[in-house]
Length: 513
Length: 60
Image (cartoon, rainbow over the protein chains, first blue to last red):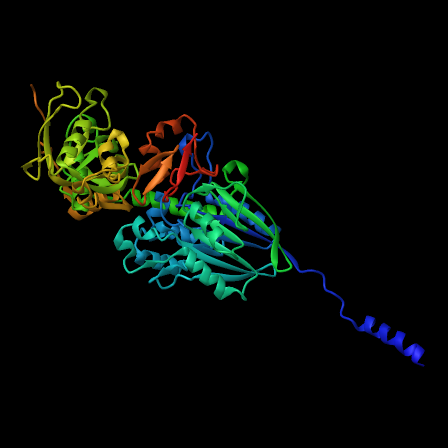
């Protein structure tokens, strides 16, 4: 009997032992865009031979790719603001199309704050997907992360935005908000979510250098989907075991990242950028309708009156002499920044505005560039140097010719360039070469545009060996507001004054030798 | 903030973009001739891309 019991016992053990289950293996797809900035329609950047982008075309590609495997669609920030298509509805159209496209989540970018917190709260309320911002304190409604099961895989998407948001927009836009370290925030979120997700994705709006640093310093991140630097990462890069991706800008590309999840980890990935253009296929008709609807609204907004002018506003002679339109724009700039005076390049004004009703369209034609207000502290000597530069290329009808506010000057065209400026007054007083003046200008000039190096050089740190008088002068940058275009400040001026009749007031005079 | 264009150090303001940096470096016209802007890892970057401290850009 015993002879049969032992083999029977072994057989029973074999028959009753649990059958090992096959290894768990799932394939999921992450689709991503970043820095859309409201570029809803196809466009030709930098004179491209054919149109690129078009969000309706991007959505058609996203739908096709989503049908192939379980997917997430993510936005890495700076979606709501930028192009007129977005700006003139303050991002409302963008949220509507993101709802139609069924985005799963968006991290706020620095530009999401440009319309102010009240507008951002409205957009957040309209969205059918969460706005993420784990490192932002003081803005109720922002979620730190999204938890979603995709194809059987639990995915945590943690959203972080660059702490430089605090200084990259006007202070009023971020009043009461704190932007904490993204590294500390992600570290904490990973700890909190350890048992709640299989894959950890950081949806980041801080730029590729910071994404790379985050990947190196913080273990446990599977993927960083990035934005902010508008980087075209054609194929994913791996840093410190973390996959990093970014999909360029302006709906010109849709990022695709496939992950194979097995035995509790990502064991394989493949990624690419699907470049978007009308040539690549048909658009999604629902999204195309939304784009067309808001394009019509933009046209209506541009056709609205902002005020009246009782005189022709001269935008033709701005490269040769003082004009009433040049005076008006420089006045707006000076007032907006609280500066002592203002100087802009005449070339920033591209058209005249005839007497009568002024529509937004005419204003935008006159001031088509995305310029914003900057104010810098200059010495009297530097102010004179800027004016000399402004009148140094009269013969060329150069855009550098200045239009000014709060200052007057005379110049002699017959004198050699660099020695043409004669008397200068600021706020009615003779210019003191050793004095300090807050001078408003636009960002193009502040970055050295039209050869105006004096503004850009004023922002350089003091040279080595600089004396205490240089170091103690205090900050040279007084004002910078990238969140509002100068043309919109001028539009506000028209709306406030309703009727204007600016005249040339003799700020810039010729001295005939 | 300090950034670099073709290894030239430049000071620009927070909120400025790749385009401002290229303008400051005096290389904006090169883009009209077909050149593009790349980061130090060889990725093309858009002209509206944000600047970050010590960003290295190359016009080529």
